[in-house]
Image (tube, rainbow, N blue to C red):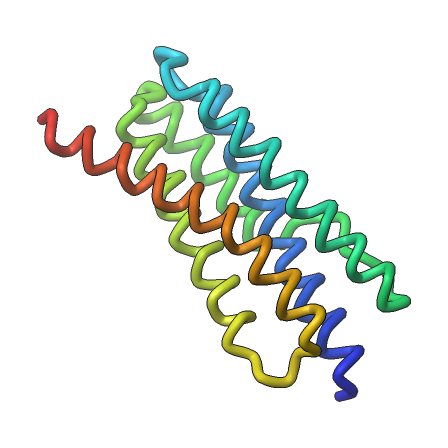
Length: 152
């Protein structure tokens, strides 16, 4: 695989995961019972859409066709989250737990991409920049989850 096609493939994988994340945040905002986390979820969704746009721009710059849809797995995951929210009565704690689990997944995907030594320096740089936003979102959800657990 040429470096360029590896770059595009890696970026498109991250785009799909980032779309999943943005969609997940939008679902979480709809499901949040009290709405107390709704604005946080909406902000994070918007940030993830910005990251997605940055990554798509990089794929275009490399002459590739950017991903514009999430992963199939995420579709199944969203159905599960929606089903779970109905069963749990749209409990904020359950929603935050799901969001945090999704954050662990996206953070791991970006970290895996950053460890790929076959990527061009330009693409590695873009991924690192986008990772800063991903990490911030992950840490925020982790902190919210821990605060909720402390308040049992």
